[in-house]
Image 1 (tube, protein in one colour):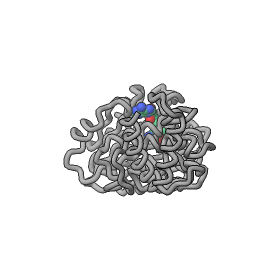
Image 2: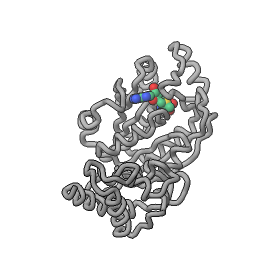
Image 3: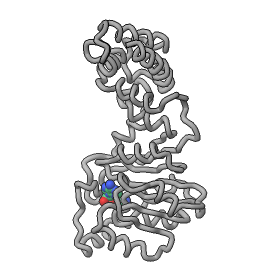
Image 4: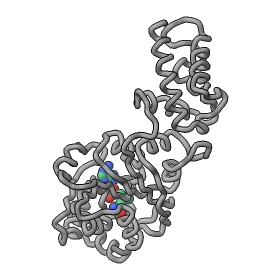
Length: 304
Ligand code: SAM
């Protein structure tokens, strides 16, 4: 696919790109090749593409993987995909919304017997995070994701503690994956041009998380709460989340200082200075804190 071919296909099919669906079509063959090569696909592997658009990346995936399935929400693009993908008998386009479709069913139907399943996509930027979180939280048998996104989001995924980009998204993604920004992509590589630069990120799924937590749900809740207001200390963020603004234990009507004491105790037992901000805590520290706090809250609730 190149710029002329993209323009010609869109014009002939009477299609104008929909901004609301994040449609920015990649027109640079070199970048398409680099994405596919980062996915390290072989003939026994399966590729799941999200948002094939007019099939620029899909074509390359069909050449590299044993089987490719592409999920596209926009029905107007189906005839274009049919035309572009006609030479390949190992590709299937599924018309649907990646946020709603039954992903386990799709994987079972289309990828039974593949050696590795790899997600490859130039993601629709308006839903990058919900897509990634859905794919990760559903615990699908995915080996790797090579995905293009807004550069700024890529930097957040890949961020380390103590940096301005580090936040709950970094921890959520790094809990499941090893992250690597593979290369940057200028906005000029697309038709139409987006307002932001992009980056291709490789997310390799971990066999097991780097920290062990008793409740993933509570761990992620504590992480979220700790970043609720970035400029606040971890103590104040958690106090607001678990004990209301005044530090009054919710539902107990009891001593307003009990929440503060409990929280200070939990932070102390976790070896974390209450004056620190969430952005300085490592995943390890969040894991320790969530374990201690979960027990302390359970004790507190049975007490109150
Ligand atoms: N893969 C093509 C390329 O690289 O040129 C198109 C990428 S474009 C950035 C994003 C694609 O995702 C569009 O084709 C858009 O219609 C599709 N899309 C948007 N929301 C979607 C959703 N919820 N489910 C599936 N596809 C979606």
